[in-house]
Amino acid sequence: ARLYCSFLAAVTRGEPWEPPSPPRPPAPPAAPVAKEEILGWTGPDEYVQAHLDRLEQTLAITPAGGPGDRILEMGAYLHITPALKTRLGYGEVRGCYYGPAGRTERKSVVASSGETFTCEIDLFDAERDRFPYPDGHFTTVLCCELIEHLAADPMHMMSEINRVLRPGGWLVLTTPNVASLRAVAAILQGYHPGFFPAYLRPPAPGAQPEPRHSREYTPKEIARLLLDAGFEVARLETGSFREAPRPELIWVGDLLERYGLPSDLRGDCIYAVGRKVSPVLSRYPPRLNS
Image (cartoon, rainbow, N blue to C red; front, side):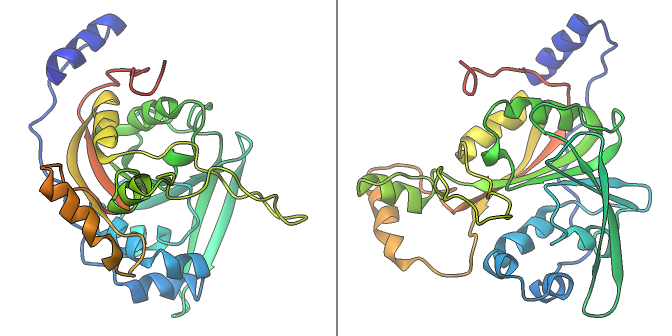
């Protein structure tokens, strides 16, 4: 069905159509990147300390690259960005962040070993602006902890990611799971299932406001989003944000099992890898757009 839809999409645009190559699993990283290596670039950063599990798992599912491969990290804070070059082997590492379109910032970090990593960070609005890269420019795009912040048009971002990826290129996407055991427990006890509040306190004078969560997703929604955006789902799993165990949620798993409800994909964070196999199939999917 996806092949037929991609064929119709090509005919509609008046473009030649070639069937995608057979699916293949993501290439593994060159070697696991340990938490100590991440901390070697970031130092004792409070945010990184709280999210080490997620950062380590993100690198673990990111396909390795080579000298001729380019990778784009969206929302780059340079927490795992150096490892994309030093450990995963990408020849060119680029970053982007929210800001006035057309500007590029050059940022550097120094590891505890004394090694320096420098990266160009392009500024634009992922929901509204055309990404400042040619078609098919990147082998891999990382979109981690970003889509839940988009309030207006997440499919614009997904469409642009599709455009700037080469055929067969990879999209690594992570986001909070609103169908997690924690979220189910919250609903059953009368609370909102969101992982983070939608409303934020005013920032301190001179400080940047924290980005709010506009919409959190379930794993099935992320899978459907990838398919609508022209990606084959190569990997879909969930896991933790933090190392702390949650034994108080055992009862939720028992309840799901008792009533024959799905108990898989119930971790706090969604980890997904998509492979570009076609142009965008649905620019305004009905699950997202009314």
